[in-house]
Length: 199
Figure 1 (cartoon, rainbow, N blue to C red):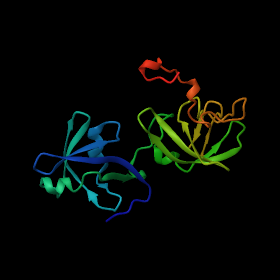
Figure 2: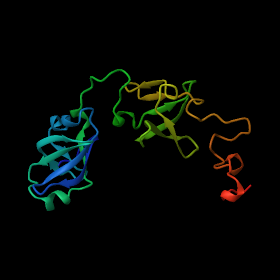
Figure 3: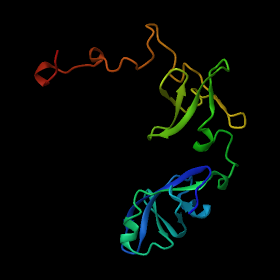
Figure 4: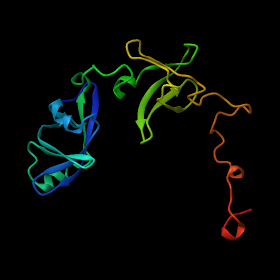
């Protein structure tokens, strides 16, 4: 069993597909079929998975792994996350493309170049990448990973520069950060009383 030094998640195993040990796999690669090009994939616990066959199927790929030959063995793997070491990935991406693993741990600087925090995670809930940043003296905040909110990223110098206004960190006239006070029932339009509204 191999423990990776700098793991990067490439896929997650889904449900079994058929009775011969095939599995539906959601990939996080640019080209889903390229998953087989990275060599063995590893689970968090160090188990290695060698791809024997891969083919497209709607929004996922169907994969047959070496040593998984029946549905029971395949079902036992559902939910397993698959990783490769960062060193296995190419560095020839475009200037504004980054691996999530390269962003985690970078220092966060404001528009005056003052250090204000650190990137602790990168999330994507379907609307684009979001940096999870721990700011000094505050809990973590989420910052959209857009050109406006994060105008500069330097992997070699280990920092990202943010625009506090575009990132939603600037306090408004009343001294409250945006979204701090939660839901405002007075700002929500209500329907007529006979439709269940409370006017």
